[in-house]
Image: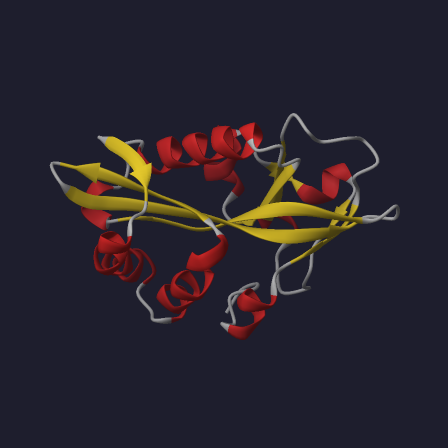
Length: 171
């Protein structure tokens, strides 16, 4: 399996993987809208895109000031390729890249049983507030990277794209 940055020629294959993984049109629309300002990686097997991950800029409304952070959303692996470590490999590669860029925090909404394997923990346990009551407490998660400082607490704020595509909280 090869991991690499998403290229324009990958868009159709990525959209297909996202649609297969999520089964609706909301999330592929989110991916298309986020593409200009993201870290987007693909997993390839035998020349076929089988997985995709996207990280995009958001904010932490901390008492001292706004902090630029990232959110992991979405993570998609084609159903026939799931349970082979592709998702974890994409997450780990993305977090390494974001850490090298000086990003202090990465937030997500997801299953804590899955994401805890790659270092995510409940955001509320670290003084962070979720951006919507529709997000279950246990699903609001964060990983602190090396640029994190202890004063960085507060409310996580999604970019407007997530709200415009109705991709915040449970539906």
